[in-house]
Amino acid sequence: MSDSKNLWGGRFAGAADRGFVDFNRSFGFDQRLFAADVRASVAHCNSLATAGVLTGEEATNINGGLQTILDRGIADAGHFDTLEFEDVHSFVESRLVELIGDSGRKLHTGRSRNDQVATDLRLWLREAVDDLVQRVGTAQGAWLDLAESHLGSVLPGYTHLQRAQPILFAHWCLAYFEMLSRDRERLADCRKRVNVLPLGSAALAGTSYPIDRESVARELGFDSVSRNSIDAVSDRDFCVEFVNACSLIMIHLSRLAEDVILYSTTEFGFFELGDAVATGSSLMPQKKNPDSMELVRGKAGRVIGHGTSLLAMLKGLPLAYNKDMQEDKEAMFDSFDTVSACLGVTTTVLRNLSINEERTREAASTGYMNATELADYLVRKGMPFREAHETAGRIVVHAISRGVELHELSIEEMRSLAASIEDDVFASLFLERTLETKSQIGGTSAECVTDALAVARSSLLG
Image (cartoon, rainbow, N blue to C red; front, top):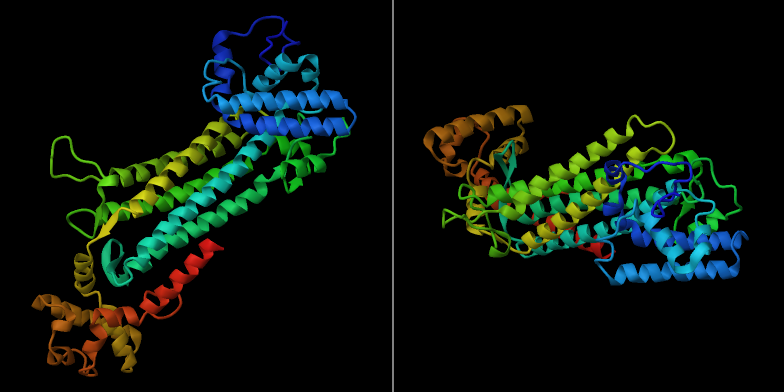
């Protein structure tokens, strides 16, 4: 006789090796699909009743039993800890038979674990996507709050990690807001391909029973049904797409983490992390370590690795279902958990971040960051840009040799290198003027940034 905890066994006379049984089992992690499995089973039961495969009484008993199993699983968080089943599907079916007897064995008519797990995954992932979209939006809201509370603050902008041009701090905040906006769009786009019903594809060839798949799709909230049964049970593109979307979120959070870590050092001194999101040293009492952001940065590699593992797992699989696909779940679950946690911590960091406005203004006002403005000034005086660029560079070299900033040079010194320069050059070199000139859409002028903040806030509310 086959093991009652398995959904198979009639073909086998001998017992399975205990080590292989443990190796083959997925119940330790796929129990996360428990609620989704019960929900899909109810819909399948209803479709069997509509098709005349189950009597009304049988369907009522099965659905009642499934509800009892669901209620117990939700009420008792430790319910699964000591159980030994091959997977969540065998657990639900075994419990159902225990509760209502042989009619519970009829539930699996017309379906396979292949289309069953594909359906469960999509149900679970649909909710996971919706949850992440909300968490990303919450992090974006924290960005806007931070930006709006420091509208007058400036920051040196960098390229190649060298000071380049001054920007408004709020403009820097909005750069990360834009990254997360694309992340939300990617998740929403991914959800469209997740929300396709595979149930009714059975093992790979489709079902022999007159199940109304479109009715099942409507009951479970799917937008459509799969068009090919082979593809339906072997497709894990949606898992890869989700994990890759998670990877991009983590890359964006990791870039932010690097900025915050750097800007919080004594060498930069732009930011300070609040006590709520920093740690101390076990040896050096003066230290305040940005562990929160370092962990976010470190965990990015973990999620990126899951995307790589999924692609490697799928790349050589023949059609249709193969047990290799069992590896999809842990990668997907951990990606969701990691991104969720990192978004939460990042949001907390943003709400506990102090800006040293005096230090950032000083940094944005020095280091010849107004050299581009000098070149633009020369262009406005009729000089071709390439010549203006070279001339401004020579003036910078002269200022460096004198140990002064551009605006500290005399008008005579400037004219000795560019005769077209007049007294109005100094107005062009002030920090506020440098910011003000970046007035086109997407620029760092106060007007542009104020407009961008309003649009950003509206996009969250919408």
